Image 1 (cartoon, rainbow, N blue to C red):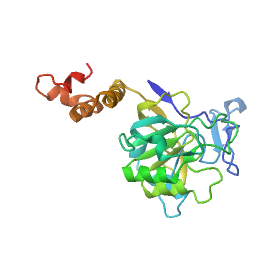
Image 2 (image 1 turned 90 degrees about the vertical axis):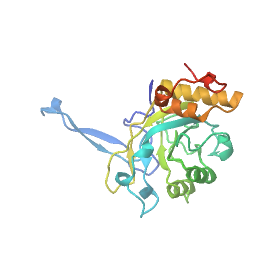
Image 3 (image 1 turned 30 degrees about the vertical axis):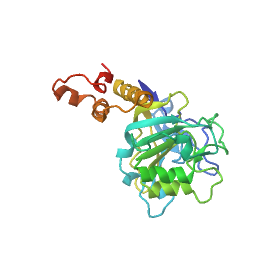
Image 4 (image 1 turned 180 degrees about the vertical axis):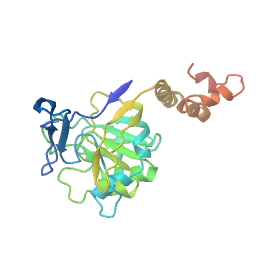
Amino acid sequence: MLYDISPPIAPGIAVWPGDTAYRAELASAIARGSSVNVAAVTSTLHLGAHADAPFHVDDRGASVAEMPLEPFLGPCRLVEVPPAPLVLPEHLAGVDLADPPRLLLKTGSVRDPSRFPESFSALSPDLARSLGEAGALLVGLDTPSVDPFDSKDLAAHHALVAGGVAILEGLALGEVPPGLYELVALPLRLAGLDASPVRAVLRSSQHDRLSQLLEELAQEAGPIDPDVMEEVRLGWPAAKERPAEAPTRATRRRPA
């Protein structure tokens, strides 16, 4: 199943106060006698679902074109958290921040995409640092920023950049249940710029669901053979090559 987690971009979409509002027009139009329709867009790059580059908060940081693509493509975990002013480490107690290495947080703190919210959930600096220390590749939120609206020092942005954690903001996660997915949210290769819109999607698969069920089973019944967990994550290639063996307590739990 595929979930589109990019809000539609249309006139009237809310942008950060003071940023360039979204505006689109047909510079050439078939209706006006042209052979083709050709649109032109003027807008802030921090629009809808978007990626922040390190250059956004650091003159010496990488531009969006210089960022590695690996963080924006691969396994991720979606976690629902309370719509508190700050998402704290305790809100993610028991969650492995680096397995999978991409974490999306569903706060539900932004209700109307046509009105910019001056109150929304952001990351605590402690959690931002913890993500980098754990080896996370990416964190994404359904809010306009990883920092609060009135932040002056942008502590979460700086901590994430320092820890090598890529940033996604403005995601539409309202219809997506928590769980394990594959994330695809590639930024444009915009040379020298600070951000890029992304077309972000989440794809669920049978393997993702099996892995999630095994994790839930492990929480209830105790540890499961790590080889079994790894085979599920990789799509069972090792299971095809491994010789038959007598069932054990661990292997009996393997899904059919």
